[in-house]
Image 1 (cartoon, rainbow, N blue to C red):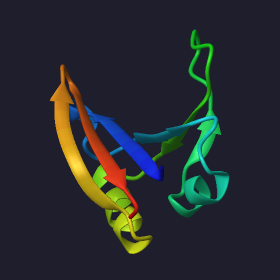
Image 2 (cartoon, rainbow, N blue to C red; image 1 turned 120 degrees about the horizontal axis):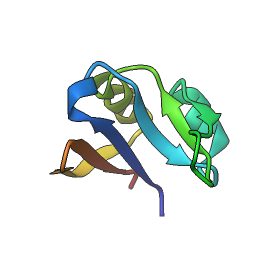
Image 3 (cartoon, rainbow, N blue to C red; image 1 turned 60 degrees about the horizontal axis):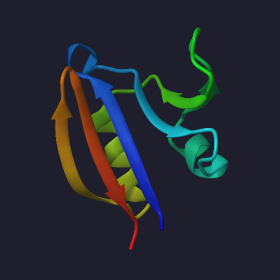
Length: 84
């Protein structure tokens, strides 16, 4: 299922945002301008875009993805996008 989660801390709405994990589609991540990295202390890698979520969501829309859900958890905004 072609689903992408976009997350961003509320206090950082100008970026960066996280758009995938190490198993995400590499071509899609590059189209979003994301780079794969690992935060100190984490045992996993994640794709990070320095652009604000608005720009990332616009790129996903241009690639055929639609926002199907959004929520806030603590200080984090999350958008779930799906490509039919």
